[in-house]
Image (tube, rainbow, N blue to C red; front, side, top):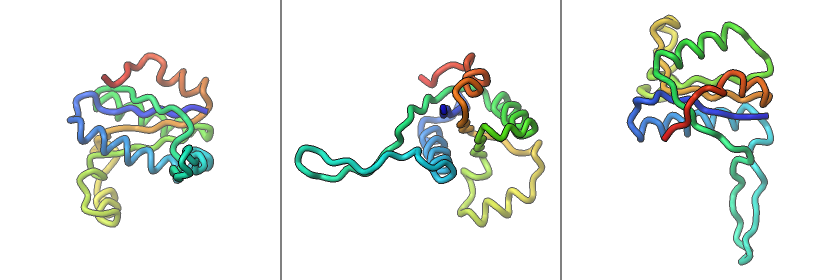
Length: 135
């Protein structure tokens, strides 16, 4: 299995960090086994489990992210988890506020800051193999 994140290449660093953190938490809550077990160091201190898979961060324009997200949702490939993080989510005061705001807009009005894709390596590579890394 493979995970990648795609973010708007023009976002400020803080918004990129927030977007990828939100997407990572969402993915970890949806897919069992992404977080490794607690580990001990030589001194016996416990270190909480962290992700046990690499997560490359790729970039596209905000328009291209929207097109990819819409295409992926239309395709409904059950092998691929697709999580979007929108401007609406980022600007909401809390999750209830997000839900209310989301109900008031159509898909054409939603702009995405980033996406998280998780699924079979071949499928993810086919969808993202030509994208550039965040630098």
